[in-house]
Structure formats: structure tokens, C-alpha cells
Length: 199
Image (cartoon, rainbow, N blue to C red; front, side, top):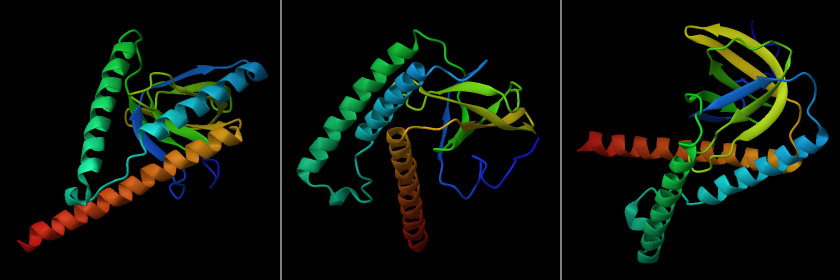
């Protein structure tokens, strides 16, 4: 089965969060209760805000650009991230998560690689474990938009029922930050390649 339209959540022209993360899903008999949706909205907003705080360090292209205070703050930040990562690993050991798979996520929906065949046009609840630091998932309901066969399973595309404005804004910021980091890293690689080629 192929993508339905140019508005598919898999559209290559749309900026998406891309990562390899655990994904869980379950079929729904009907739309979730509003109270449950409000809780998911709140939890998603807290998760994305936490990821933003953890990810606010700017990309520094040259070590000499850091002041001595900046270098000390970077060391403290590294130690804090290490402690949080160890805590998250301990929490994750209490719960068995699926094997991480490639994911593309934006405010319209999500697509991922699945070994299971999901029911097209049926409502589902999706849980994405976006951060190794925060063990709680990003949770959203939606409808299976398309299912494409691949070599080792399926490419599933789910369109969200609709995210709240706070979650949409936070998710858009996360997507843009990842895109900006990718651009900065590509620039650094080109600069390093140029310096290596000139020696």
C-alpha cells in the first residue's frame, strides 16, 4: 500500500525528527476519552520541555571559542548528563522495551519500521521513547494512514488525531534544533575534510 497524498507524514520535503527509538502501539476500539487525551498532552509537553532543557547547549565548532567558564560549565553539564543517563538506564531495566527502530516524527504524525502488519485506516495509540534520559514515552492517538512492504517488514505511517498547540510548538522546536545541529555538523565535517585535504 502506498502513501495517499503529498501531505503524508513521510513526505521528504517536511522537516522531521529522525531517530532510532523504541516504538509501541495498540489498536483502539474508539477515540480515547478526553480526560486521558488531556493527560497525554500534559505528559508530552513536560517530556518535550525536559528534552529542550537538556539540549540547550549550543554547538561549538572550535574548542578555543570556549571561555574557561564555558569549559567548566561544559564539564558540569557532561557529568550531569552522565548521572541522568545512568539513572535512566536503571529505570529502563525495570521495563522491557521494544528494539529501537528508525522513526520519522513531525506534528502531523509518525512513521516507523515495523515487523508487524498494522490495520490500515484503523485507530491506534502510539508510544515513542524519544529520549534515553527520560524513560516516559511520547504518546499520541491517530489512524494508520499507510502500510508499505519493505525487505524486513513494513513502513507504517500514522497520522495523529491532532496535537495541542503547546505540544505542537515544543515538537516543532525539537525538529528545528535537530535540523540545525545536522547542518552545523555537516559544516564541521566539510571544514575538517578541507583542512585534511590541504595538508
